[in-house]
Length: 75
Image (tube, rainbow, N blue to C red; front, side, top):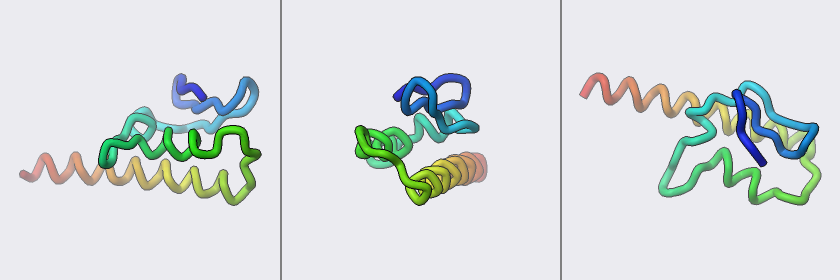
C-alpha cells in the first residue's frame, strides 16, 4: 500500500483516488486511521460496502482536520 499524488494504491493496478494528504497522514490517538483501516484488511478482497466505508472514513478525516484548523484559529 502506497500513497502518491492523492492516490492510495492497494496493489499495482487499483487505488483510491482523491485522498488528501491530510487524511492519509491524520493521527487519532497514535493511529493513522486511513492507513490502519487498509492494513487491517490486507490480503482480503474489498467489497463494495468496504470501499464505500473507506471513502466515508476519508471524508470524516478531512472534515475533522478542517474543524481542528478552525478551532485552532479561534483559540
